[in-house]
Length: 227
Image 1 (tube, rainbow, N blue to C red):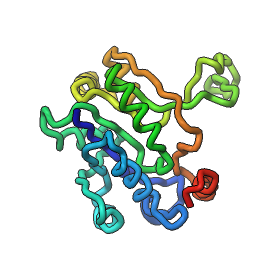
Image 2: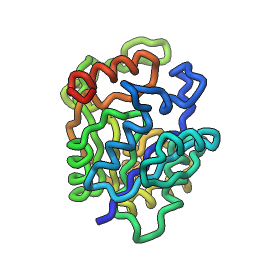
Image 3: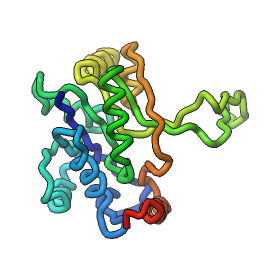
Image 4: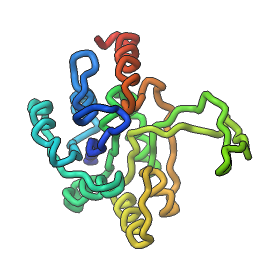
């Protein structure tokens, strides 16, 4: 079985308020990007890595990742288009599972990767998630609370999100025919009518989105004894 990881790094990161890709910011001496790629490069269940980036970031990404064996493709206007661009570089028969991961999640663990790959092998579609800790409210256009979902049935979905390659390609094709663009890969596959299963992950698998996430990530690394 051949599993290909697609690391998404083509976002503009406006909420980080930085003058460059947030993946080039450092966490305890290593860039966010290198930390993410390093973890996947060490995963026994990953056979190939494709990094999706913006054209203007390619030179910087190549410098940061010069020690790693991987390939690049350019991102699209949306997440769905970015993954589609990566899929287009993969020949039929070369991939069994496509492993989609946010480049801005550098604290993913080897266990989460392996557990999600194993579940996807069995079920065809799987994603990492964590039980929701907070009470969630549904509000209307006036911000009035209209519903309170049962927290015990809620999962906060993260990445990696892993799918049988043929299922993912079929889901992409359907979405294109429908003229819809999904911000979540699980939703893309759900739209095909395929079930997606979840693995209970680590709360430390945070996404680097805003400036305060950097010291939080450094604290998590210290707690894990990784710095």
